[in-house]
Image (cartoon, rainbow, N blue to C red; front, side, top):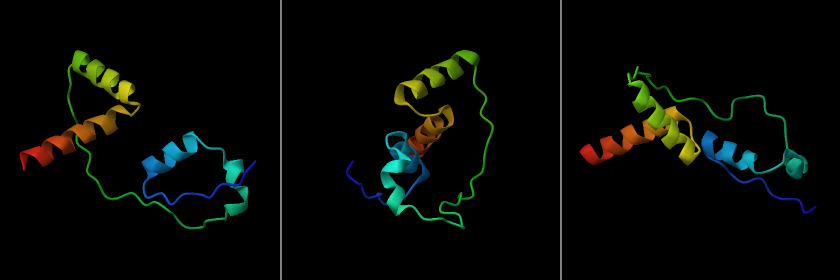
Length: 86
C-alpha cells in the first residue's frame, strides 16, 4: 500500500470528515505524540431554542439529509440569516 501524506486541516469538522474516510494505519509513519491541545474551543454562548415537535422533526429530517447534527444545521441557518440581514 502506498504511503499517503497527512493533509493540513484547519477545523474539527474537516478533521472528522477526513478520518471518516481514511484509516489511521495509512499514516503510521507520520504520527507523533502530542501533549498539548491541537484544537481549542472558541468561547461561544449557548441559547435555548423552543420548537414545536413537528418543527423539531422537520429540523431532524433536514439535518439527516445533509449528514450533519441538528445543532450544526440550526447554527448554519442562523448565521446565513444574520449575513443576509446585515
